[in-house]
Image (cartoon, rainbow, N blue to C red):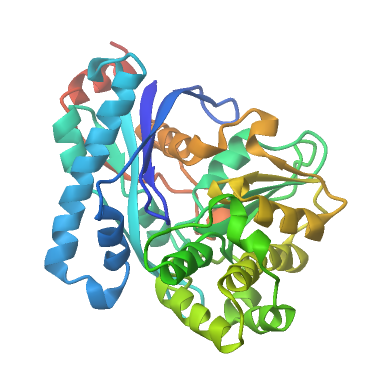
Amino acid sequence: MIIVGLISGTSADGIDAAVCEVTGAPPGLQARIHHAITYPYPDGFQRRIHRACQPEHSPVDALCQLNADLGEHFAAAAQRAIAAAGLTAADVDLIGSHGQTVWHMVQPDGRVSSTLQIGEGAIIAERTGITTVNSFRTRDVAAGGQGAPLTSYLDWLLLRHPDHWRAVQNLGGIANVTFLPPLSDADSDPLALDSGPSNALIDGAMVTLTGGAQSFDRDGALAAQGRVDEAWLQVLMAHPYYERRPPKTTGRELFGLEMAEELVSDGRGRGLDDASIVATLTALTAESIADAYRRFAPAPVGEIILGGGGARNPALVAMLRARFDPVPVRTHEDIGLDSDNKEALVFAVLAHETWHARPGAHPALTGASHGAVLGQITPGANYADLLRRTWCGG
């Protein structure tokens, strides 16, 4: 099947759209990206999303309109990706849209009671004419899971090493890891968790320090100029989230702009310059990831595979390599996968599995009571034909 995967991540800096081909079924499922683009939001739109992630700035009327406006942008991103791939909407079977997470409701005991992703699927299906699957996380939450990290299921299907445990480490706004047993191990379960912040606090600090002129630390340049305040780092590592046992997930509702603003104020109170504040928050990402491995890895890890935007931050990658030495730290590209568009591929694969009435998550990865079929299907103009071709044998 030809499927377009769509996602706007925690950083909300645009929509990743990938035209993918997905065939087969687990354990023989195969997936590849034909063509991928990044669809930039118009000026000011990222700020609207970030404000929607703050309860005091997200009245119901603004959230309602943002849901529709995001649907329009997701539809436009799909159309642009399809055209860039040299295809038409008639060539595409499904769209799998993650949408934009604006709130992930984690209770004090770590249980996720609700999760909200917006970007109206009905608008995507109406504008493109393509049957659309969206709202993937809510079914896993309904089944008692965390609703995340859903990328871990693709890791489980495609990225296990023949002989040793592999950690697949995503460095998005939030850092999440999948610990994968080798293919030679038929008895061990995988484990996935959000370890804490990745780019979210660094980005929030950059916005705060520059008055909005810069939204991230490009190439880790500012962090490289600063010094890590080790005493402050130890204080930051005392946050109770790091001790919570998996399954566990988090997001901007905890490690977001509000926390970043507070940490900038704390850093200045310690007499740190801007570069040293960013260096210490970058070290917090690296240390909280390493701490999660020490606490929760089910077995010694033979290699670590980095993906996500943080993998392009040399300062962060250097800190991770120093903490994990002598374990090899590689990138998705080193094993033949495009890390920039992996998450878009994930939602193409999940849409494929949903359409075929197969689970889209492993209960050991999310903590759900069972592997559930994920997502909500909105019929597009191609719906009846797709049913005939894929379910009726015609």
